[in-house]
Image 1 (cartoon, one colour):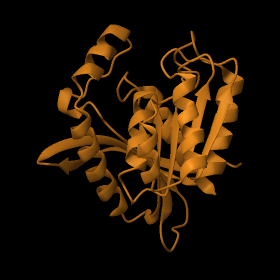
Image 2 (image 1 turned 60 degrees about the horizontal axis):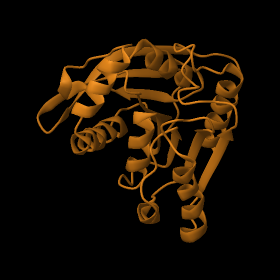
Image 3 (image 1 turned 45 degrees about the horizontal axis):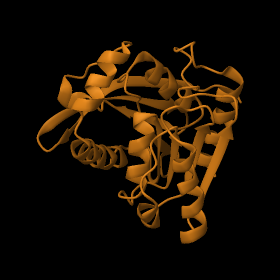
Length: 234
């Protein structure tokens, strides 16, 4: 695919009188009558890092408006490469505030002139993957959800899925269990929900993050990227 020019900036939106920063990247191309499809990108426990910003540019290069909110905004907008600090940030994060912030961010994104408000999806990684699955059961504005190795909600929660879900599971994951992933298959069969699970037999948690060489697997990351783009465009 021929690359397109993109424009990036740091933006802000309000959530319960709190200002939340986000990284926004838009493709520069002839305007579509209804705007471009958009994707909300939810970062790992490392925070809103350069890796996530680079990923946002990749989505924009593929034709999406990419919107990466800072899930740690209420904790001082921190980013780290230290697992101990990342664990501390995750433990301090209040999920109810994250969900409120994501609802507010989705509303803000839909109102932007270059966005098709009927074509907004969400993609999350690890911690962000967990929140992507939660959003898929709460936010009717989302038309598709992709979760990379996020924690899976209880089976009964999957009855309330509001959009199709694509889940990337590394079989060597030490954080997400095979039993959790089996819940997704059960939810698909029991509730007739559009859930697709892709398994990567040799990959471990974080296999998509090319800044973490201890777990990155280039071949699996490339396959997951293509599957994600195909899923979102469909």
